[in-house]
Image (cartoon, rainbow over all chains, first blue to last red; front, side):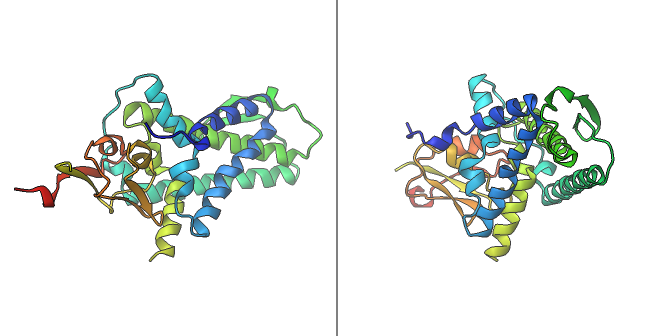
Length: 189
Length: 68
């Protein structure tokens, strides 16, 4: 039996994150940790230590099938981990991230704040109860809604592929994983 | 010594670390974040990594030094 480390319990992090965002959308900004830290770690020569040890989402996808005794042993179809799909999905994800920044900019410029969470970049889910702190500039709240939507959508996709295939199938095409592996490959070329 | 050990297809490996987590003897590490690598001296050939890998890029092969 391997010794448990503190980072083995990081599956709690996504649960805490989504719970906090459910009550106060401003907590969505905490998700930036999952965006910035892997890039910094990979850039300073730490490789994919974030994916390997500290990714709460990866740990959650690993622990759920174990807890539910799911027998998902099927390997994902090969296109799902092909370079074309991985980099294509990264490009799509970054485009959507850019669009979210643009929406934030529009609100900064005076457009009205939209208190909805957009799932799968399509379905608008009312989420106005989480808009509890109204004293901050509207663009900060708009970014929170956009970022929370991105985080929730990617987690839902991860849960779907986790149920269909092996637990950490999301990791095969996770945009952050693709990006950090790309950084590592460039650095060690 | 076991008859088999795990081998990683470095072209497919996404270096997610799922195999590292599954390995009971800590025989797997990632090389500079690019791909996973198995220490054949530690590997016990249990196949847990192979069954966990989301891309199925780990296979068990017969050890060359154990072939008859």
